[in-house]
Image (cartoon, rainbow, N blue to C red; front, top):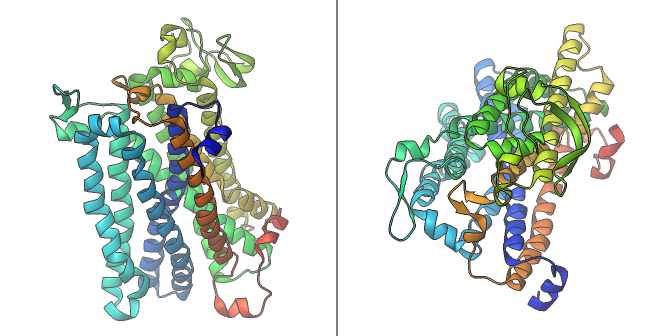
Length: 466
């Protein structure tokens, strides 16, 4: 697209804003696929292990069903990740030059360990069951699952270091030079962020699996495969959602210690509260007037959650210079979206537990309808959490040390606008087609013999279940 046309569409944006929008757009597409792949790879390993242990063909059928979906999602995750990485050189070359001595090796380790492990064993997992024997095939499946977890480990280590930078020195060129790799890799926020993200990936996959199973239950496709995967997904919701809430609370306390203004934005605390801060359930942040309009709040509850003392003082954004405040409204809303989805997941998990005890897990059609509606909820929660983390770090790329405005390449706004439009068009075409194909695969019953005696399920009718 010509630069002048692109500039007309983004006439009110400067190069920095456009570069940030472009990175946010590409990373938002990218993150949903690895989040799904991490959980689904582990699910496949569990299914394969149960097949080898119990010799129940239901598990084998489910493995063969979900491995096709995993392959498509994994491929889209790889492609979107490769494209995204080029922006470090095109739009953020100053950041790459300054922080490259630290983040470059960490990202290289991700390729040399996780990506090579996944690529080396993926073909064996997909096509090698009859060629290499059950033991080696199981090992290959486990290695693919392990590779996705290692990949998340390195990427989150990089991101966590940018949030809580330690273990470095600055040379005469202004570059961050590593002096303690253990401190860099295991930086203060890394353990909390890793656990929170991995659990989010498992819950994302669990609710996709639950939604697919619930869809087939609503279509009266009550095979052993369908009921089994719905049961497994609901067990995951019951067991993992409370753990995720606890992990999120611990992560929040860690963030309060190292990035207090991010928590201030999340809570909507423009003013300090010397005698206990309220928990603002909802409201409309007014950044011009430095207040939350129409706030619905519970007195002192924020101090109780963050300090475990309802009377504990909490600082507000009035203690932070204006040029160091993050965009409050975006962080405020994204944090609440993530929380709302988390508690919705917990509610569905507890609902399923009650129905399981009553023996009605596969009969409760309202539970199935709700599960279909919540099928994409994990992706929304992951995106909301990522927005909270990244926007809350602003105005820095390396927190407290390197501003976003100082990280940009020497590029002009029309150039960035043209590439942004190209990304939007290509991404929606390519990944839209890939997502549509995954939905088509999910719309088919897990057992081929059952499918032949029923009409094909059209994607356009997915909403009918609700």
